[in-house]
Length: 131
Image 1: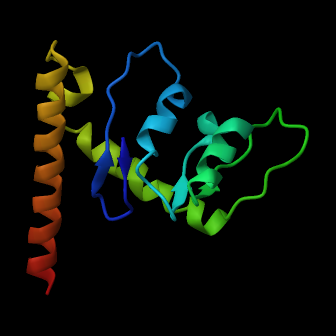
Image 2: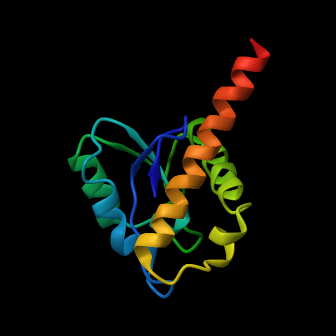
């Protein structure tokens, strides 16, 4: 799932559990241009970095440990990734998403959409209460 730091969903893809995320990274970032793309080490490949830069994106991906040449990336921007990881952790608080009770992909994606809406409503309500 591709989301912004303020939790707006840009693109989503439901793949099999036995497929690498890197196989679908191009589809998730195809519509994104001129942005910093923050991904984890699983997306580290020269081909993927070149693809991101061809769309005027700036890859913020740490290099894997087995790289012969270290990769430089913006560590301050990479720290934003923790917000996104926390977002997914909050989505998984919904038992139906964490255990995937729904067998059909459409129903499962529907529950993801409901969880995202619930989380955004929670953010709006907590913001309204504070101010």
